[in-house]
Image (tube, rainbow, N blue to C red; front, side, top):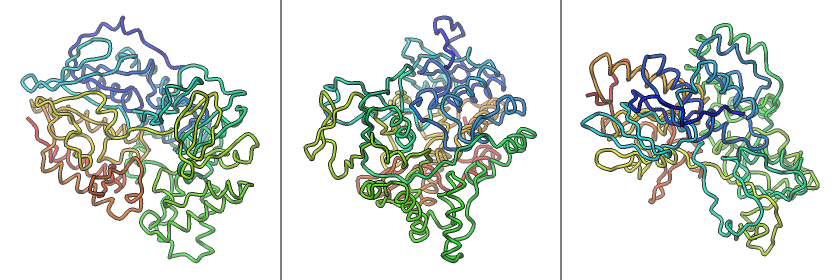
Length: 541
């Protein structure tokens, strides 16, 4: 359980160099790094403890889908070696314990206002300050505002009519209650089969009297092949953490996972199948990158997609159910690939029913369950919504930030995000976004993305101080050029043409891919080059 703090005992001054919003991986590291630089820092966190997504996403089965040995801080050898992971893919309870371990070791919690939401922030140009309001009525002034709110924080609201009439209990995977939710012996319905749904379904089925899965679109899911920690890799990394951090900064995804270097056409059909089988048995997201052209060539992609579909057909005993679970409306990897532990096997249980809501959409929620358009009614005691997040814009919008003209940061994003390096948006001096749209963001190991972004921001603040400058924001032209560069990088990927939370669709049907797909290594080089040239593309005053 995360530690909590009593806001009434928080007696520090109301004026700070930096306010950090969010106490997940990015926020905790930000507080540490800015304090290390001698700045006064205040963290604001809506939850009662640190953890961010791992504080709120405590649903049954929740775990990271990136190897634990890299999904962690690379602050020092001591911090790294002070925590030994239990599994290849750490489960939510261990991840929450880990971030508490780091926050306690670095004595950071005393600098955070818990149970507090940022409700407004207004830039004062004459004073070069943000005036920040909170849900507790406190007003705070800060030179720099750092939004470490993440992309998986602002939950989508259930859009189904009749929810207020439901007499049972309903919960969301994205904000699972900090209390026991009774599962045993209950009739449970889960809506959504993305990453969260795929993880939750097997665990819910183990306890439910009956589990009904409402699936709109099947997603590709491959076995995680989870196992105990690879101690040899952990020892290797822990021997020289700075060197490991340097390696990850030069990796496409800031991970250890392999990436195909040749197109599928370079191999015989037998070799292709052997390579796919080998990766299937190894587990992990590298299933999306076996061949170098897998993300851009439909034929290469289909080789892997059909392999996965055949595995589903071999696993699920009922051929009708198996076929409904086979994704056919999008190429593999064009939505986030799911890693599972026994997901497809779950549909062989007698207490599990799959409902295809593409064939029979949900009409409404009733007092006792869910009504579908084909006239069927499913009696339920508990409804679990696994419907994802309002990513890239949601958390920033909910903070109610305004500049001196009364505009919000995303007001000029009507045709897709407009940022420079995904770190700042024009018209908002000294406002930084960690892992924002226009950076690699969710396409890479988020902990390393967070560390790099915070380090970049911290170095930028030190540059301003050293040179007697008060503010920084993107030049409009540079922001426009970067946003076009990000769009061009995604021009040939299959993912651009598939509806998912990373794609912004304009009213005229044109599409903009919101993160930068060129690779974390290239992004780091470009961001660091801007800094080395005195923050080229930014207006400093």
